[in-house]
Figure 1 (cartoon, rainbow, N blue to C red):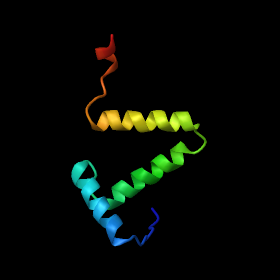
Figure 2 (tube, rainbow, N blue to C red):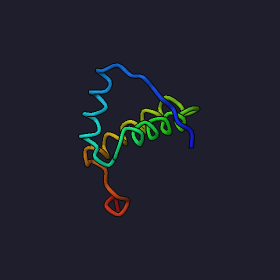
Figure 3 (cartoon, rainbow, N blue to C red):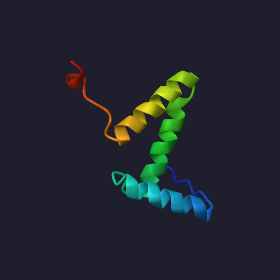
Figure 4 (cartoon, rainbow, N blue to C red):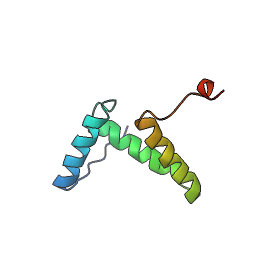
Length: 73
């Protein structure tokens, strides 16, 4: 596994800390950054509409508005 050191502004550090408090499934900043980069790489080549649909889906999931397929039937 490679190592990447990144310098960020203090304000971004505060934003990261706050985000991690709101999303405790990230155990550390490295996990959060890996996930963000993964999403960035996966979203390449997608249409603007597809990216918007994914954004809306993530918001719905995070706010517990998402439902399972079984619930839709």
